[in-house]
Image (cartoon, rainbow, N blue to C red; front, side, top):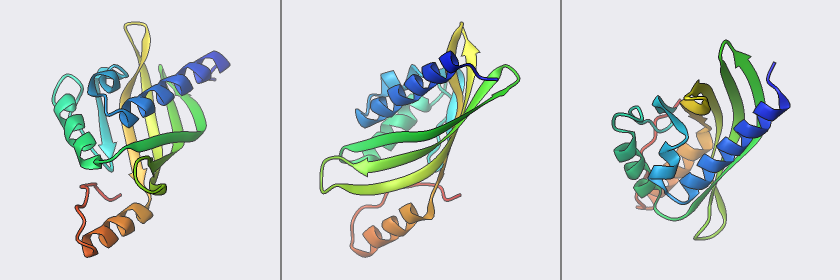
Length: 150
């Protein structure tokens, strides 16, 4: 069972890296990951001790304008020594007209590293609406972001 204290702490970590993403702050974002932690799913990175910093710079540059990352509906499960957190991610435009940019199911696996909870795997399954929006942008001649479907 995951304790209330652990749930609160992990929810604060998730909020922290969402805010780091909003601010396009690579160094702060990296601070939430284990040494072999990485991102997979709609966007991908190499591990933290590998290419993650450069990969994050590219991801943040592709986003262009300010985006707000909102995490909600957290579910927690202890799996061995790890804690898995599933939640919904909502990404909204924060600079131009208010608009939902993407929704996704997110799965994070947290592990203890040097007595701190760190992300080992951050996985997003982006909902189809994002790809429909990208197709519309391409038809309108706007630059498209690169994401992996599924």
